[in-house]
Length: 177
Image (tube, rainbow, N blue to C red):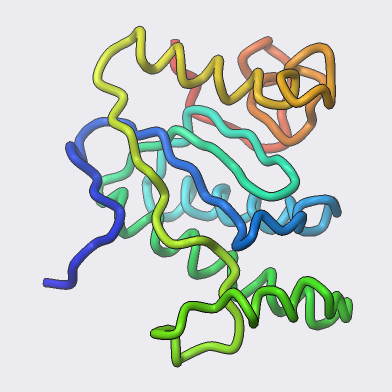
């Protein structure tokens, strides 16, 4: 069995996950790039049983709370697919500054690729009880407020905060209560 670098402690429970672009590069400043993430989550929900409880996408990282039968595999597939798709997009758009940094940041042992998109790991944290889940969802939704991007969490379009306020979000989620 292959070693997982994601350390999902209890696969039958939701986990808080963070994915960060290498060198904190600002890739998610274009709606097209964020849409690729949303499309991947939508596909995983519809075809692989991913339960997505909340998310936020900022310019260089994202947070989400999710559960799946094999969350480690789901996370690996998410990062692998989105990295390939986003690098192809950046090449097509000739965003050479970002591509050059991703090439420079590539880990030496990654000989099978030209670029590294995501930092390794995802810092999974078990959502063991209601209080922890509520705290992490609040953290996710207030992240853009804390950064000064918006005054109200529901005003950040790349977040599930709208879903929790009864408004339509950009993708469906599995609301936690």
